[in-house]
Image (cartoon, rainbow, N blue to C red):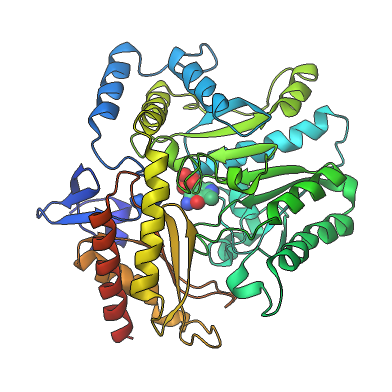
Length: 442
Ligand code: PMP
């Protein structure tokens, strides 16, 4: 008998006891291919000896020093590394313990920036429907995942949501990518004008949508148009790359592929690859300068921010990513994954869409391909797929359709960057079998 709430609620979960490479093992010795990296976290796989060595060495040096009294070499080194490889203009780093903390800090930074600049009337955050930015209250308010928000609404700050850029469902049949990008981005301009251009703090978006809609990349030019609209009205652009960043899509930052530099970017998950809880906010010089010339500090903080062990994990993971040229493997294996998914599932009667970038791929299931009608949410098809996949020794990240009925069940694949060709093929085979079995059960 355990008092762990997680066990009390999820009685049937196996107990993980060991990890190695792309596999996790449970207490019975059963192996699972970690095809989702947990939740797009384990980018180097499990028990990487070089990360373990770096963590042991850091533990021998110093495990903790409160940021109110000290900085540490390892935190400074990680920040310098992140800036060296960051999109243009981002030149300061704020280290935190995860994705939600990164988003909270980003929102407060954006607000304080305008206070420092003498524009304290700016108070609105605009984000998108069918997005996820974390489960703490500010991040939850920013996200547009209705299922996660519903019961907490009375506690959430007011935010404003526009439609996501979601070609499969929202692009019209005869609409070009260019026209759709203009229409989707145009929603931001309309919202800014409605709220009052001098009232808006920031627009927040996941570069490639993860946990709500399953690896949905923007169409070409969408983010460039968003950047231009933000610039036109002096609104900050915050890109949330907690899930899609740090190499997951084949470039270190997903927005590199869109030719856009945000004012603030949030990262976590793949930053430390699951070896420690770590996240970060990268911010532009102009935001830093506003703090430096104004009050001289950023009014925020957490006990564990800049934690040396977390920084050591981030530094080791990022060093190995570069040293071993793993972004090249993400691109090559990402292409192979896409090819295998399309070959195996592309004509499946219940597969509506296969999409994504790099080793970040989504499969959307539909009841009817012609109408794109989702399965009834009550059938919990995504949970059935997860169960069937686990039975077959495969971890995939399942998501239900949104409660507004605007999309269907999804499966997200985010395997470690070290996967090989035969691993990818095994993942797709097991996934296809799991999908078939799950559908047969509804
Ligand atoms: N932003 C995005 C885009 C995410 O995918 C997540 C986690 N799935 C978060 C924020 C929250 O991160 P965490 O769970 O580490 O708090």
